Image (cartoon, rainbow, N blue to C red; front, side):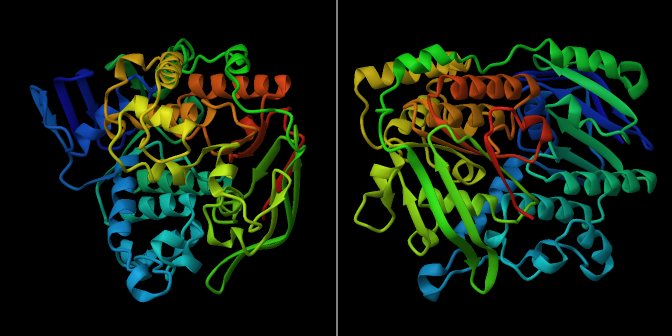
Length: 460
C-alpha cells in the first residue's frame, strides 16, 4: 500500500492519499500541476520534503521519462563504435528483462519477441519505451508507478498495454498511473485524482470524481500562447525559394542486415503538409533523420532538399538553416548544460547547446519566446532541471524561433498536457493557413490528424 500524509515539498502538497490493495489509481494533471514532482518523490530522486507519513510499497517499480533518459545516457557511455570499427548496437534488449522464457507471451504482446537480440540503440523510441515498461513488469514488483505510459506508443501497443495492466490489476498488483491528458485515463482504473498547482485537489472512486477531474483539466489554460501574426512579423527566412522542399526516390533504410523500409517515393512541395503514421519501429523517425541529415544513409539515398541533391557539395548547416526540428531523438540528445533561454536561442544557430554569443536582438527574441510559453521566470534555469513538458515546450520554441521553411515534427506533443497539445495543434493549423512553413508531422494519435494535412504516408 502507498501512504502519503501531510506531505509538503517545493511545488507539491498532498494532505492525504492512500492506494490500497485492489485499487488501481490514475492521477491526472497539467504540465504545471506538480505531477512530475510527485513522480520524482516516489522514485527517491527528491529528499527535500516533509511528511507525517510517506510509506512506499517494498517492491516498487517505476517508469519515468527521467529513468528512460538515464538508460539512454548510460548506453551512450558504453558505446564502443569508435573502437570496434563498426556500429556498436548497444546492450541487447533481452538483457533488460528478467526471466525471458517465463514472459514470452507478454513480450510477444508488446511485439518485441523478434527484437530481443537487437541492441538498445537500434530500437525506435516507441520500442525502447515498451522495453522499459517490460523491464519493470518482469522484475516481479508488487506495485507499479507509470509516468505517462502511453506516450510514444502506437494505438495497438496502447491497447495491449491496457490489456496487460488490467490483467496485472486482477492478479493483485498495485498500479498508479500519472498522466497529463484525460483521454489517457484507462477504463480499468478504479480510482482517479486530479492535481492542480502542486496540490491533490480531488480524488476518489472513478465513477464519483471522473467528471470533476475532466473539468479541472479543461479549465487549465495552456502555457503555449503564440500567435501566428507574431511569427509572420518575425520571419527571417526568405519564403520565395525553390517550391520543391523534399524529393526522395526509391528511399531505403536499414540497420546492418535489417531492412527498415525500401522503395519509398516522397515529394514535398511548399504547402504539402505531410502526416506520417505507422506502428512503432516501422521507420518513421528514421525517414525524418535521413531528411534532416542525422542518419548516415542520407548520402546513400537519392535525396534532394530545397532543390539541391544531397552530396553535391552543399553544407549541412545550409540545409539545417531552413529546417526547424522537434523529435524524441533531439530531446534525448540535449544532455548538455544550458539554460532555458540558451536552448531557445540555439535554434537560431542550429546547434545542440549555445556556443555563439547571441546579439541583443537575438536574446530579446528568445526572451519573447519564453514569455509566450509562460516560462520567462525560468530563463536562467538549467534545461535538464525543468520538467519534461517544459523541456518539450522549449524545444518547440527552438524549432520555431527562426520561422523555418520546413518544420519537421516527430511526435511534437509528447509530454504536453491536453491544453498545450490543443493550443499547439491550433497554432500549426494557423501556420498552414498563413503558409508560413510546410510541415512534416509524425503522430500516433488520431485526434491529431488535422484537416490541413494534404498527404499522408502510412507505414505498415
